[in-house]
Image 1 (cartoon, rainbow, N blue to C red):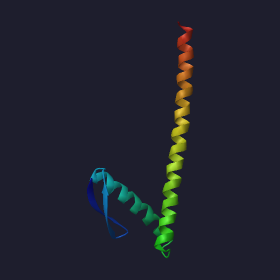
Image 2 (tube, rainbow, N blue to C red):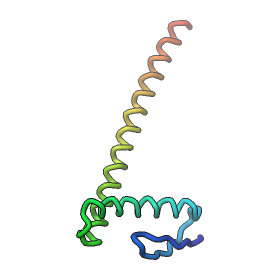
Image 3 (tube, one colour):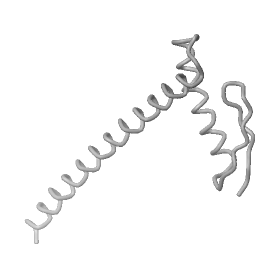
Image 4 (cartoon, helix red, strand yellow):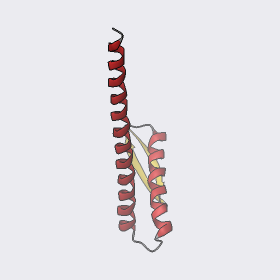
Length: 91
């Protein structure tokens, strides 16, 4: 298990984990970016409220991507079923 120093909103954090340091840095940069977006729209917000809004934005993005993935996955299954039906016609 390694550790990496990252900066989020100018604060230093030492993150320990099994993931590659580059990946941890990417995640930290992503979180920092989301927090910066919140502060850009509400500069007087408290850090706790900014963190909660950033977390909600990240959760929203995750759920939208999951829903899109599930929709695509269902479409693929439907296409596979149709293809199997067509293949059976030739057997």
